[in-house]
Image 1 (cartoon, one colour):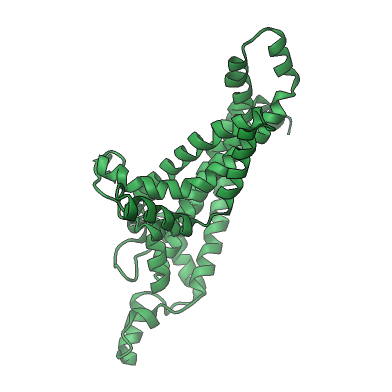
Image 2: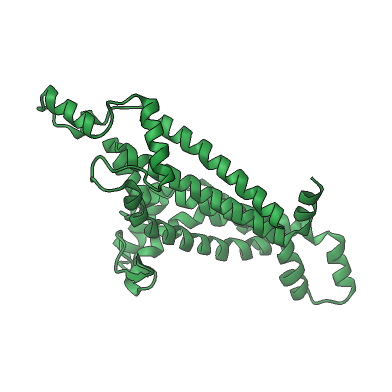
Length: 325
């Protein structure tokens, strides 16, 4: 198990190094933030001073070496716009995005897993076909349109939930979290539901397919022959088996929720990392863009590492195959 873990950590470090290089070169080679940051009335001397202050007068390879040296020390540069460390800006917005993605993932699993298993147990029934048809609808609805419809229904017409913002927060471990307060949960529900619908549809279809495939396996037939109740067969044997492929998908989808919550955060004015990214792109705030992308890549790498470990715990064959290789 330790060899398996060390190998995965080494691969993760290589991925991080490669992605950090690509992210830096891709962002710093495009556009000129001076055109946005400096007033059009500024003279040439003021423009040159601003360029020198931001370090943009150096060759690209020199900027990259400075970036690597600073990144190894935990410094991803200072925001051109805010004048603050870029990583601090990202981390200050991260709790809002994390709690949005986490609550959305919980809703997606709570809806998708049982509905998918019901559809898999009775695929030809009216309920099973209805669940599969609903999952197709969940795939088809654009996030921004779904968010606007939820705002129209629950905030404008029914007036039971707020249309945007984060609401009241409570501090925990030095960070502000909104799901510890009733007002924060009310503000969190609509954006989390908007983000969860697509993922719930995906989980439902995967759970349905995995359930149908598992029900015809020999170990399920043996369990029936032993006289186990259907509830125990489904709740223990079938559920544990279908969780193996679902763990990988759910882990990756959690990472995608964090990375691609930009639209949802924009629609609901949710003060997360995605909203900060959009503002930074408009202003060509390169350090913040690079810091955001590196944080997202690191998040995906960590999630993949955790998924690999959990997968190996659920399926011992993974560890055996690693030993053989």
